[in-house]
Amino acid sequence: MVDTAVYESPLGRLRLAGQHGFLTGVYFDDHVDGPQISEDTRELPEAFHHVMSQLDEYFAGDRQVFDLPMRPVGSAFQQRVWAGLLEIDFGTTLSYGDLAGRLGDRKASRAVGRANGKNPISIIVPCHRVVGADGSLTGYGGGLDRKLWLLRHEGALLV
Image (cartoon, rainbow, N blue to C red; front, top):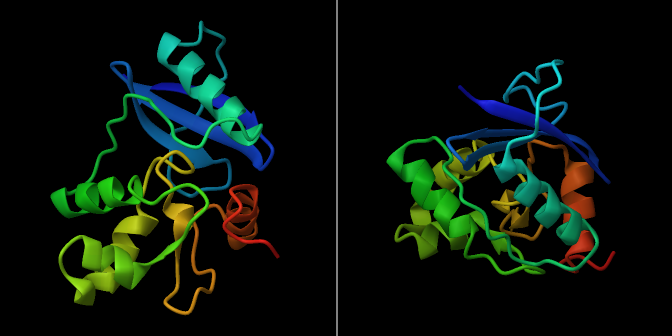
C-alpha cells in the first residue's frame, strides 16, 4: 500500500507518496505522473511529518540538504542519475553534460536528461539544478516557472 499526503508549498500543492517509511515521490499537483490522493481522512504517517517539516525549513530558507529515507523507483541508470543529482550543491547548477561526465560518460547527456525528467522526488532530489549546456533553463516536470523560482530561492540565479 502506498501512503499519500498533500503538502501546500509556496509553489502550489505537492503530492507526497511513501511506502514502508520511505519517501517514494514528491509531485506537483499538475504532474501527469504521481499518486492519486485519497479524500479519506486518516492519520498522517510519521514519515510524512519529517518530510513536511524539512520542506517547511527548505522553503523558509533554513535547510539546504534534506535528510530523509527515500526509495525512488527506477532503473539502475536512473538511480545513478538521481544519486548524482543529490551531489549537486545547493545554490549551484550543473549542465546535463557535466552530470553525465560525473557519472562517467559525458556523451550520455541525453540519457541523463531523460532520467532527470523521470525523477519522482521533486525538490528533495534536486533535478531543478540541472540546466542546458549554455546555462539556459530547460524542461522541468513542475514547469519552468517553478524551476526558475527554486533556483532563485537557492541563490543559483540572481535575475
